[in-house]
Figure: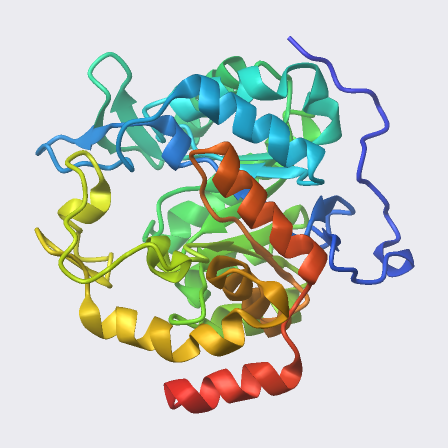
Amino acid sequence: METHPHTHPHTDTDTDTHPYTPYTRPLGRSGIQVSALGFGCWAIGGEWQAADGQPLGWGKVDDEESVRAVHRALDLGVTFFDTADAYGTGHSERVLGRALGKRRADVVVATKWGNVFDEATRTLTGQDDTPAHARRALTASLDRLGTDHVDLYQLHLSDADPERAAELRDTCEEFVRQGLIRAYAWSTDDPDRAAVFAEGPHCAAVQHRLNILQDAPELLALCEESGLASINRSPLAMGLLTGKHTPGRALEAGDIRSTPPAWLPGFTADSGADPEWLGRVEALREILTSGGRTLAQGALAWIWARSPRTVPIPGFRSVAQAEENAGALAKGPLTADQVAEIDRILGR
């Protein structure tokens, strides 16, 4: 098990000495510095399912390729990795822990808790919002990740009861005092719920959906007011902003997008990507691919331009995807004029 030195990397209590650069951003008010781009580790968890058989992963994975992709990301300057205990029912944490190995001290690791699952059958079995479960889940995550602390611990129940969340916020403060975590956050798209966690001294972020097609002005305003980082899941709209989808192309079985749940717009059962959404992407292609960017790099550049607090966390399953996503860092954010033009095109 890796131990961490008393002085953490990427830490500076005076964040004012760190101007926003294309490469690093502060993780809210925690004093932790992260790469402006994080990597989301949902897909590398492989296949898993809900109790009713609904796929919850992104299809089959090659663990060795996942490890190579993490190593490539590290080499390209990515220092922030976001996973969850439920991804692949523990498998994502195990793969990430193995990939980081002795380089654990060089990175900021975020994971999540709140879901209950059966690792043997790779099935999600329920949810548990009790403080006792939070402690059990953290202990298990530390073991799978092969580390003695998590840098950012996130509640994974987006619609948890706010009163119970206040209790869990206090539990997280206890974890900070015990040195088990450095900071915490809530993964939710509800600004009122996020505000409950924001009251905690060691709350550092909100994780929420944000991409060029799905803006989140209220959550970005909360992050600004409360001094939090905005960690952005679905920055590529579940793949719609990669340019790799065409109308009528069905997705493989085992991919959550092949039978999309109600919260996942932009895809239809059996026929893949929604043509209307793809039309919007096409209308933005010229702006997003400016400056030699790929479509995906342009989508990430929009997020950085949207707010200096944003840290998008695109998913990946291959070295090639890791290289493309990390390549966005060198190109930086879009200009204010480009952002205004995008709003005009989308009628915002």
